[in-house]
Image (cartoon, rainbow, N blue to C red; front, side, top):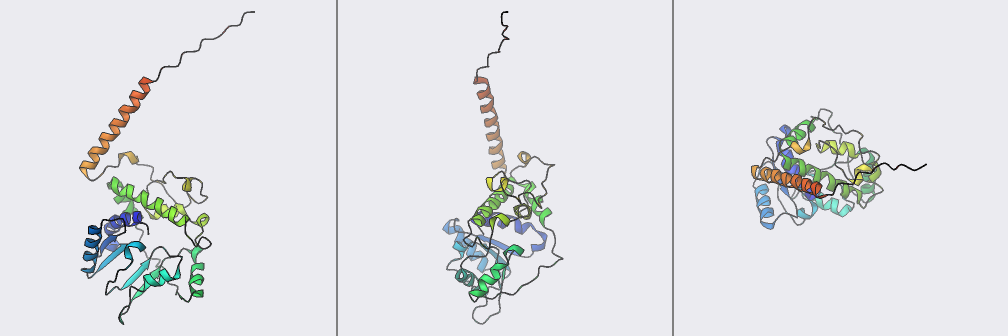
Length: 257
């Protein structure tokens, strides 16, 4: 996952009812050193915690007692895959490793098998709850969450597009409408990658009964500043409009016979 994805899911996932009882700790390389150290100390002290982290942030980490590694984004380098998985089942202990793949990405399994990294298929449960309404509910309540969600989606799209294993992770076949739905976005963002993609709207149901400008920051000081900025922008537009000279009215021309 990208740093923006960590920032978003680190805020959203703890709000889901299915994850109650878990303590989620975000960690990525763009955080200040003191913040990273605090996050790592917090995670290692937990008996039932989940660390959300990027590859860069996870490098060099040696945390004992890790029960499961979940790879949301498969790496193109098998060595990186093995390195990730190697953080569980240490010192003779049991451990699990899971990687998420879309049906169109299943050739990645053969890609790893050839490189002597065997995988076993595990079906997703049909009873898995639909958490999108809960995510969207969180987005509607706080503009900060909404903005984090858009940044996460945009960064994920662009990272996927640049994946080195593009013959497996094919950009043109990525169902970005469904991806946006999974991110809990209220509307599709205006970006070239979405505008010109054939699968940009398939599977996405926009929320049309809400004006995104009406969504407020939960932080009162940020919301106050936002309103101030909006008012200043409105006044600047009005001044610009007043400063423009009016176009002269064209009088009809009558040709003499």
